[in-house]
Image (cartoon, rainbow, N blue to C red; front, side, top):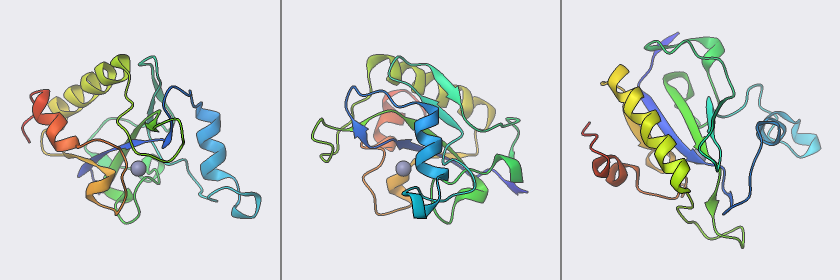
Length: 154
Ligand SMILES: [Zn+2]
């Protein structure tokens, strides 16, 4: 068990406007590599923010300041034992390749409420984008700029 240090924001890297279910994500992440999945033992994110702003919990979490073994999700290599990962549905335009902040109004509102509540509870846990700890475009927007916009100074 380690201390929680990061809240990492992600996108599903799926086309704008297309819904993704928790079953989809579970299948992508936990299906054996031989069958086209990632072959992980656990899904990559604790919470999933749907297009309509609904927040779906994928992996149990007791909301305390530690990352228990059973809370670990596989969102960012090298950071999982000290992180919580949250993902919104979307992140690329319809061609499926070009990065874009596709968050709907409802998703932005839900994410804002989520990070504000989280920050209140865990003021010393740094909120970052996946792209700040890996050479990736995820989550398709600048998390630090957005946090300032919504009044979070960490
Ligand atoms: Zn990511």
